[in-house]
Image 1 (cartoon, rainbow, N blue to C red):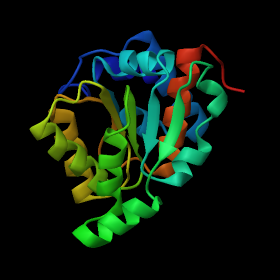
Image 2 (image 1 turned 30 degrees about the vertical axis):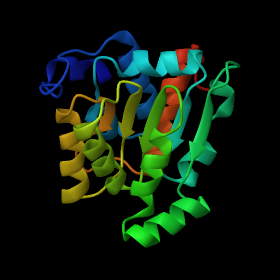
Image 3 (image 1 turned 180 degrees about the horizontal axis):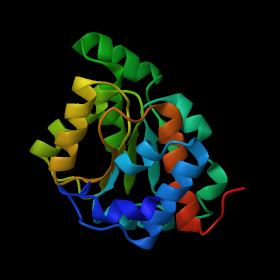
Length: 202
């Protein structure tokens, strides 16, 4: 089923193929969610998986936009080299600054996340504003140490922001269109980590 996606043109804005790792990840997402359309919506930029592999190997950070995603990422898939999962959305400083600046906590949390040293995977499963902030920051500074996994569900604004991210030069994994949401985001992250670690679905 997933292999058919190699020829259907869904990667027209990115790489024109799925390698075996990508195919296996998408198969895992379909198996765990029962949602073929979700699996078919997922786009990988050419360097995204390589970035995440390096992150795990070098003890980088997976930074989420919600504690619901952070709490459900399987820590045993992070290995023993210091990789960690962080979330700043409820940090008191983030809350205070968001109120002072009259912006969303998700935007301020992105700034906090980008300040974390080392390689980063910015995971957005709920807040389109976080995607917008990442795109804004990229317009003004290099972000070669960042990969973005964006899978918020929703209509016009979320869909458009995910397409803007796809059109940027940020390394990214994106659930395009209206598909996504917190459960889908968690499933996708864990499927990627499991594939990197060579572990099968339990």
